[in-house]
Length: 86
Image 1: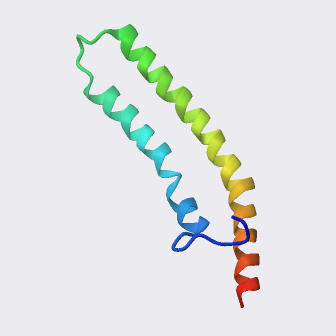
Image 2: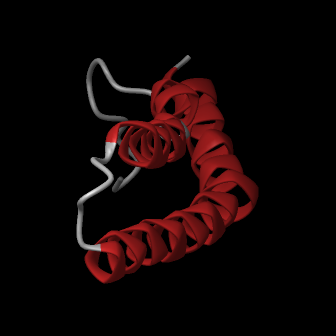
């Protein structure tokens, strides 16, 4: 950040919207399970669902690191920069 906040961007905006990816993966799993034709390749379907579940777990861990480490650190930096600008 070089002690200069980007114009028109705040970390709070990012933190409000980055969880939506997990919700979309859940929706995708539900759609696949509900609408997959009975004659579909079961092995391929299971492999795809397994990959989505694994991706979801990794994404959840990634989001927790952002939520508990990076977002609070950036919030402190933004606050410090705003205080220095006054």
